[in-house]
Length: 376
Image (cartoon, rainbow, N blue to C red; front, side, top):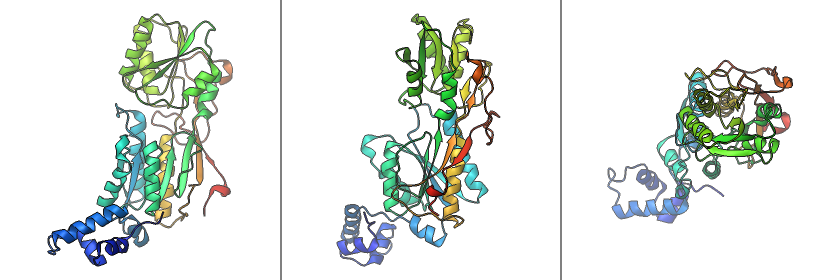
């Protein structure tokens, strides 16, 4: 769909293009433009879906020093490691290049549509946007593409979705978690509890159900923080469940599960194993090192920001494509630890080259997708 421009609005409203600019830039009163004329211009802009968007102009002129970071909906308890890693990585990566980043999130409201991205573009000159994939953000990303704003997609898990943009980077979560689950020892007469927080059901949990068919029990915590995980595990034990392992959707919940098991006097991993995901730095709980897998979201964010800024600065220009090419796949890495009973095959992880996570554990390795995915 062609992007409506100022001339289209002027024709519909029956005014000069300069009048459109003055009205939509808030100068109607100062220039004594009649109220009826100003309203006619605004109505024409709404009908055409036009917003006074400066991103494309700034890109061509090199004038904008700000990029957007469009996050997926924030969890009910947003103070979790993954949000911190993504936002701080984006801030530091843009600052190193002498640029600024504006984070904003998919509001997660059904009736919001793409209005949130229109509001941002109305107020801020964006040279481009890094988009974390979510249902609303996919629609908002298409809107950005129509407005000729360069978009780099960032998927925290591998996906077959190919939204429009200039590049797409993603993580293969199974590369690190699957080997860990394959080696997890659970007695045949016991179940595996899948501990998750509210709202979100990560697709990686399917890996657990595949390996322990008919033996999994979903356990939902009230938050994604350690105290939520601890409360859920306390309740699970009070219900008398026969559990051989608690596999957690992330490390924050796993640390809470470890704390609850210790308070209940249960031997970990002798009686119950605990497995996390993320490789996050341990909070101040004193529960020890987790069996986990790295989630290289810092590297992912830096790769996405780097691809966008390379394009904006002319270092590596990319085409605005109907399907953004996958330019990098980052592998998760298994991180066996003493919280789980694991067969000897996984006792020594393969330490792939890569940067360190905040915990000092390897965050993952990058797999280039090869020249065929490069639009250069």
